[in-house]
Image (cartoon, rainbow, N blue to C red; front, side):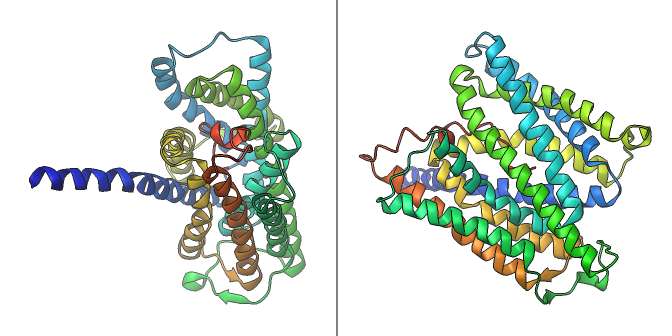
Length: 360
């Protein structure tokens, strides 16, 4: 009797573990957006922030990579090194700098919602590169295409349609200051453009990562290399962009230090492990399905912690983005549920996305 109860408890824990892990992951990403926005509001340079984040991530990941990958780590070649250098430029440098710069001009909620266009952009690039095959007459492919269009449309609504305020700032004081309505709209458009370009760079990163992992399957070592080169390349960019301002490199015991440590350890360290474990247990579709949850958590935290206002246009746009995202996810889930579908196995991108970074 006791043995059967223990088996049921163990079975329940095994089934619940992926849910707990992915919910923790999305909560972690939401906290990252809020902490990063708070650090940027404190005057921290987004260029310096990216450098410190990946330096910390490199220190955290490397010991695990040296130990766990010593039997699977292939010989480094010039071709592999060039691909890794490109990877470290696409995501740690271009994507994250543009994302955090866009975050400065918008809000944590807006940035999290705009990031939901990433699966659509990745899907388009994967289709062009033939990493993802499309059959126009297939309802699954139609769902992916419609979802992609809806996701982009939702992003445009969030950018161009503001609408009335649904919720005033919590506590009556906003942390975001604008000189006027025109300036505010210009900042929103500029921020959305920067975030969109960053998402495009991130999508390129995922596709190139899928190709690189074929020749360099040591996932932890690849992540360590990306963080190292990303730190070096990011430092070069930061030195140019912040030339003549040595004070931006100093960090005190405040929100800037907390944000740097958190994003480096969790979002560029532990997140790799959680994401990889969940993908092996439930597949990449399971992970992607929970992406909009991050936006909801950010909206709630941003309202209470960052005194952000909630506008009707952004809520409508976010809803359209979520609808489009779920259409894409539904199409992908049907691919995996149909064993006879030739698309399965050709979708290199999702099955290799175990070391990709989900927070900008």
